[in-house]
Amino acid sequence: MRSEPAPVTAAVAALRAAGERVTPARRAVLGVLERNKGHLDAEAIAARVGEREPGVHRATVYRTLQSLVTLGVVAHTHVPGGSTIYHLSPAYRGAAEDHVHAHLQCTKCQRFFDMPAEWLDELRESARMTMDFEIAPGHAALLGICARCRDAALSTAPQPHSH
Image: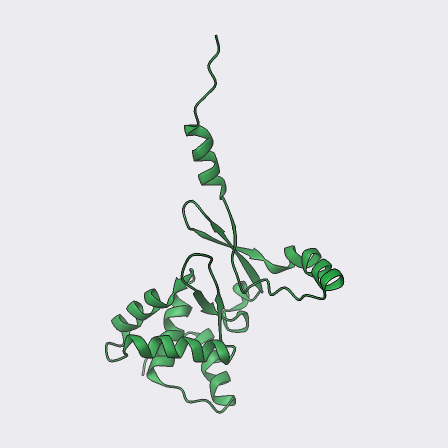
């Protein structure tokens, strides 16, 4: 058996500690998420798992993702008008990435950006105090326009005529 990166080993240990089975599909999904630090949807994960473990069916990957999210090993973010994206939960991502974050998505180029969740603390506290509502900052992407797309739009905008 090939050696696994520390985040995968930690996630596998957590599954075993919870009395869960560690299947080839689960190992493959965890490996894909560990190697690909970006924001992958289920289809992209299934394609990469298929390259690594050809015997793992696409439907198995989808069920595995659901299971790993339920167990708290994998985190997911809903993307308005798009596919849900997945990554290892903060406790399994390694020291440099061991932080809770929220996601921003550019509505022009569709790129994602990680944002420290604590930037939303004031909003979360206001929602809690005034509406008795608890915001889950990592659960859905916030939409906007990134600097690159904004600057590109400004540079191609028609300039006013001077007479």
